[in-house]
Each structure stands twice: as structure tokens, then as C-alpha cells.
Length: 352
Image 1 (cartoon, one colour):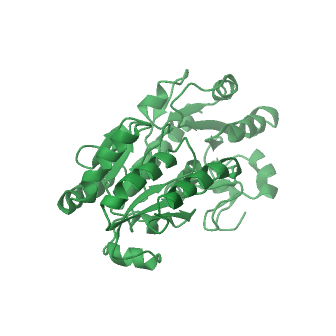
Image 2 (image 1 turned 180 degrees about the horizontal axis):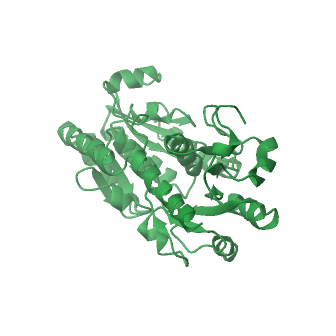
Image 3 (image 1 turned 90 degrees about the vertical axis):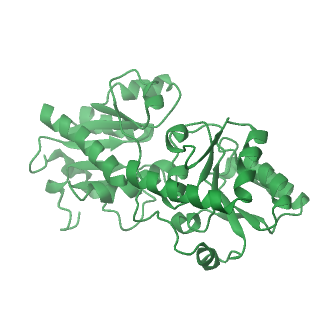
């Protein structure tokens, strides 16, 4: 621990025990600094940016000491691999901890996960839909967006040029893991069908394919090459400064076949970008007729039909971009999410 974050003042530990970048990791990276504005909180685990305040491994034994002004600390887990250590710390090592779990899943959990959840002191669901799959009392807290990080571009052409993209071509993007579940193939097939009819557009796919999905990505690249569109449909890789790539877009597409919550349409909207999204996760609560278009999951024809009007209507895109940014600011600020999570902690401390 540094003198800046003495452990006696730390009330919450937010573990992140998955090294690869994911939606959960992104949530922690955004939330911890926001929550730290009003309470002592540390992240814990690998793969986190240097600016986040972190619990060092050698300081874990100090968790036996109670914090200065509360009867216990809170261990806020978001994955099975983080719930189990919390149970061990609380129940086996008898550390003064209470356990909170955030569930983003919109399907019934496995028996093992249900067992873990049943041992939590408080449970948060990221959506009403997700909460319906929980067998325990819970609080719904929808995600928010860091509006200081995700905001509209003052000049999209300049944003594209800064990324070595063609500044004179409008851009449509699909960001997230490259895999079948995320519908990357649907986006690629839609672009192969639409871009020849809209020569002023380019398509960007940001994200990585893990080893088990590398063949899936190779197949998609092959389709693009066969269509002669390798210069206009580009895989740009994984980026921790993904906000810069959102600001280069004119349209965002979220074609997921399944999603627990899904931050990408929110990040796009906060960046002043309308979204075409599948009817999964919380996308129906986020994407409205004023900010984008919803399509049935897995329906390529519906996806193409929803995307194409945006490619030829500058006025419609501009109006929806303004509405999207406004909705993100009003309904999904990160400060609101942090305050609602902190209220869950406060109720635990009040119960003692």
C-alpha cells in the first residue's frame, strides 16, 4: 500500500482476476476511480492499468484489520473466480469482509454459480432481465458510462485521420470480442453486401479473437478478401483507448447473438454515434427509435435492412447522433451507477 491509500481507509476491494480485456474489466476500470471520489476503494488483480489504485498481494494479510470507520470491508466480485476467494477470505480465514456480487448474465446460472451467489451478502443485477434469472434478493443497477472519456468528436474527419484512417470516408464500426456469440460474422456479411453500394463508407472491427476463435477470424478475413473489400473492411485490433475509435465513427453496429449487459452501444451513444443493435442484453432499454434501431438477434437480412438507411441519410444520422449523446448523458452517467452501487454498500454497513 502507498501512503496515498493507507489500508485503514480502504472500505471496498474490487477484484479483477482475468488478465484479458473484457467488459467486466472495462467496468472496473471506469467505476473504481468514480467510486473513489466518495469512499476508499482499491482494485485487485492482473491486467489493470497503472493509474488504478490497487491492493498489493503482500497487503492481503492486512485485511484481517478492520477499517477505521466501518465494521468490515466489502469484497465486490463480478465473476465466479472472484466470488470464491471472497468466500475463503470471509469464511475460512475469518477476515472482516462482506461479499457483493454483480451479475450481468441473462440466462440461468450453473449450479456452481448459484451456490456461490447464495453465499453473497448482497447481489446486484445489471438489468431487470438479468435479475429475473436470480433466485436471491437483488438490486438492479444498470451500467453507466464515463462521459469524460466517451464524448462526441468535434471533427470526425480529424478523428479518423489521427488513427491513420481515410478521413474522407465515413466509418461504421463493430467493437468487441471477435467471435460467433458477438455476431462479428453478421457484421462482416452485412458490410460485404452493403459497402459496394455505398462507396463513401469504410467498416472497422475493433477487438481481439482469442486462440479458440482465431479460425473464426481467419474465415471472416477470407470472406472479405474474396469480396475484394480488404481495404474497406478492416480489423484494427484491440485498443485500451477505444474511445478514440468511437469518435471516428458515424454509425455503430452491435450484432450480438447473446449479451449479458453490453456496454458498446452505450459507449457509442455517449460518443454521439447512433447504433443498430440486436435485441439482446439491455440494448432494448438503451437503443430507442430516436437513438438507433433494434433488430432481431441473428437475423442478417434485418441487420442489413436496418443499417442501409443510415449510410445514405446524413440528416437522419446527425439528428440521431445528437439524441444518442443526450440520452447517454441523461440516463447513463457513470456517477449515477457509482452512487447506486455505493448505496448497496451503505445498506450492508447499516445492517452491521
